[in-house]
Length: 272
Image 1 (cartoon, helix red, strand yellow):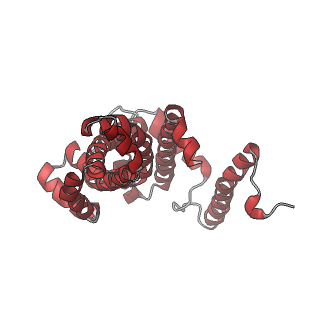
Image 2 (cartoon, rainbow, N blue to C red; image 1 turned 180 degrees about the vertical axis):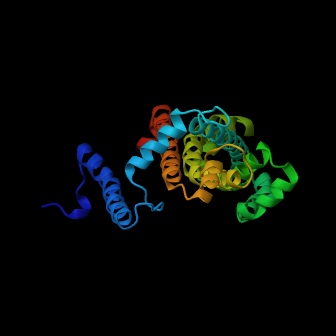
Image 3 (spheres, rainbow, N blue to C red; image 1 turned 180 degrees about the horizontal axis):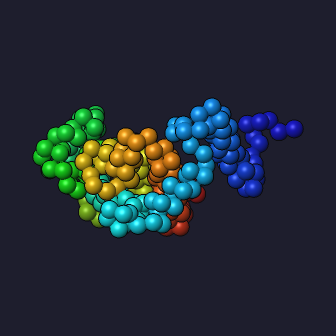
């Protein structure tokens, strides 16, 4: 008989085990909601599941009486645009600075302490500063994402670049490669799958910073809508929005993972 540590579920069992906690959460919510609604039919804290269906239909498939827009899709588009721009700029800065810090000692001695210091600054603490400097428009929201995740991505890529075996660099130098050729032909290819991994790990904090910025100063967006309806205790809207944000985050992470496995199979074989 195999020890527990050596037992691995098959693919169907993995799917079933992965879905089990979600099903248990749904059942637990239904039981708690029924108990509260039995005691108080007007309770708003744990609305019935059919209330969610009505709210989703109202937000996603009925135009707003005020603006004529489909609010869920309008909010989703606004948030994804901010998130995409912020994460893309962060990734670009991270790969440039991370490679420089990781491969060239003079650059590392100059910028590595600054990056470390910036990574220790709580991004939410400087949110008011960003609104003062950049105003209440889109730039401040994107900047919060950039400031929040870029230093950690830089430090991760820097460390990965420093872990490249020195023998590989020496061999390229022996063959006459210059610094630029070493970076573009050795360091860059090895760091690209690690950049995707860094982006995947940064998506959670990026969503957090985005929702916080939208909650304070925005006229559309998923975070804006959640904090707008909270004053009415509209849990039938808030909870579906939270679930929708989770599904979006999962979908983005899944697509990045699949792309990485398709584009860099050697990296995933080595990591396993």
